[in-house]
Length: 356
Image (cartoon, rainbow, N blue to C red; front, side, top):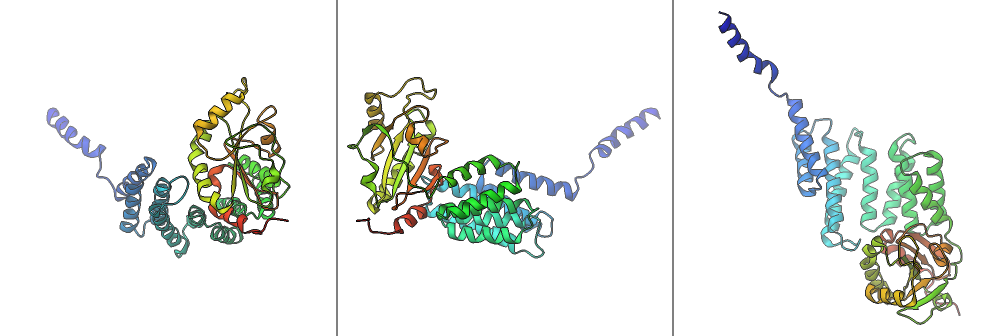
């Protein structure tokens, strides 16, 4: 009898320990599988999984969030499809796919909890598509309508400042960045915003004169030569891997905008090594200029530290870029990858005649 009872207990034990999975458990596994694809940057598969989740579980609390996460996957794919920070037909189409999902979430009734994030991402899509005017309108509306306690209200405020910077509306951008810092003195993006504010506060002032030690790929070019033209200064160093990463973008930018009248000048840090122990000689500088094949004039900066020219322009990072307008004022300053074509086009349109 005891043996029979023990056998019966053993047969019952697995059933007691492993109940049939509930519908909630199955839903969670389906969600986690989609999220894993996203985290693995399997963008197409992740987007499909999230969209399938939303369709199959339209009444589930996460249905709208699934659409949003699908849009985020499409953003990841769209960024991968870009070439040299510029859109291709494929990336533009992918970003538009994402935008449709964000609009669907934003327009849902009643408004889901993720609606503020969807509005933020819709503005980001406009920036990815190179349209800061539309991005400004999206972020401006969100800032005015979202409660200040909503996390994405502050994020939209920072992005509104970013859009204004691309539109060279620098006073408005400075006001937005200052307001962000008042509202978020210890936020995750505080240091980045402080740096952006320092850049913006140095704009709309006469450009400092560059102070070359040597020139390569050109005869000496004083700033006066370019008076009345748009000038892009690319700050870089021969030892800087991140600068090398942006080189093809800068060369492409010069190839596309040089014929339109934009001049490009590379400002090379004086040091051959990151730690600044060995200065460039004329020979090492010209050798670097030759192998880098930038295709536009390079100057070797003079002075100590980051170089006199870089210091005068307030450079805090490498690579860096500053744009001088036709009026001789610095109008834009940031990492090269963040410069939109529309910014240069706007500066080109500001007075098409050189001063006499």
